[in-house]
Length: 488
Image (cartoon, rainbow, N blue to C red):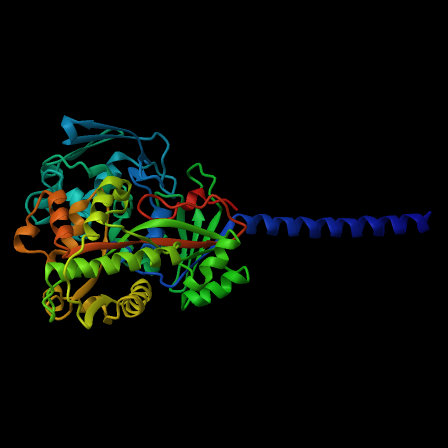
């Protein structure tokens, strides 16, 4: 009997060990399937302000914080922490009713008073240029300047789960502005100025909370206090360069890589591992007097050359740029009639004594380097004109000095059709005093275009390399990743 029992026992033990091994392996795979690794070249320690943050740096705020409203990938404003939004008195007052089950990562309910307290902190901490919509609230500017109290002077009030905000004047872009990262609701915003030190003292309103925050790596874990189908964890790893990130991506050590090297875009596209989307960045060229004292005819002919060159550049680099074709805003490219009229105006024959040399200056970036080199070759090969370009650092930009030294200035600006004023504000040093005071932006645009002084060139696209293990990746209307939508 023993000779049968002993082998049977041994068999059971071996099977048990094998099953245990299989279970462990499956458990490991399950954990890995619910985690993603996100590559970046910079992890900012200070996140209390959005000033100076890139989109990829803002992504940490967006992954860990929700707003009253957010903007979907189609540019539509949708409720987030709010369940309903009522606009009163023709856009002067807004009433936000909060959802019933919204929680901080520590399990406490998010209340209307929490949001009111955040806006109070934000007014004091954030730079004016980033919260212009909030400073439109009645009494907010005075409070920021030390006049009066928030409680009695600022028209942000609460009752139960309802938050009311009253503006000084109607602001058609108010809800759109509230979708931006700086308006995502955070606890104790001043703690966000030193994340390495304070990350574990903060409660988070978003899909994720920060489990660890180091100079080289940030670990995000899913906020289990809210219902979500998001992956369990996100590991953000800082690499020394995008090339090193790409190398790690190719061996399966990175799942998401923002703005992969241009040399890899075609390959990634062929492998269906590239997600491309429009950014809010646009390039414009100021064609001014410089040393050549360019006339209207000079400017129109030079822009004609640039227009044709950019069409070809856009076709050859379609994943990175799209030619503006005479449009100052990407969204306006749908106005075919206006663009056709502008194109026809460029085809008019004019007498022009072409200069031997034209000078151009641009802020140094990967996009501007490639574009300037392309233009230089185009001017030489197609027009027999020597285009000399210089690349400078952004800190060295002084439009008043540059416009008298160079024939052309390549300008990189934010362009948002919902906030046209911001584009022309960024061009401020190149506009006349009268133009700077324009409120009719349609008229200003016409004047700039048909005088060929500041004309649109191209709009920038952004790209994300994604692992073939991922699906459903998207960005919101502000260009920030929707981490909660990603599936693995």
